[in-house]
Image: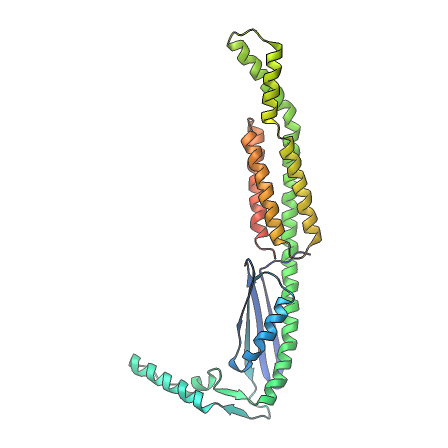
Length: 287
């Protein structure tokens, strides 16, 4: 199974201690990077959360956020960090003086992370619930990455089939192209009013055929297509391998284009480059 690096997941928690919401999103990244936005009281969970992500993901820029609202009706006491609250209040008053306008809202001070905290024993219980919900969040997140990866795999396989079809088309046209080139060379002998030397003519045809021979490039194209399908079937974190295969396919299509003397072969070479570029863009999204 393939996994996209682009995904989003959200989990909500409702407990006697209050409500909380986990959100996780990711975008393309060459390596795995994790970023967390957690309330100050739960900042200690970050190391544990990062390890959980690293154990199940290998690539992507992952952002995780936690929003929590404690219930005021629960039977527990809240700790007011008086020193920190005083610092926040002084900072707000200083900003008001500098701006020359505005009011200091005490509720904003209380809502500031770290000013009001639940007791330590309550934090432990809440943390367990948060970690349990995070496990579900991570599972949902990976499921979405898998769904997106499946769609990308279908698109890539469609283009691989199209590449094989273009290679077969070129192979089919090669006898006609060589015959056309033979007649063209014979016509040049005639136009130059040269007596046709059968041996010389055949030598020229052999040289020309070798120069225009694309059998090796077509064979390698088909081999690369086959290997790319094998990588897709194997699944997992294969984004880097697939990116390398796109480089190999692109190299063969460039060689094919450089040897082309026929409009149909040129059109096929252009189409191959378009298909390869489309695949490369999709592969950039894979883990």
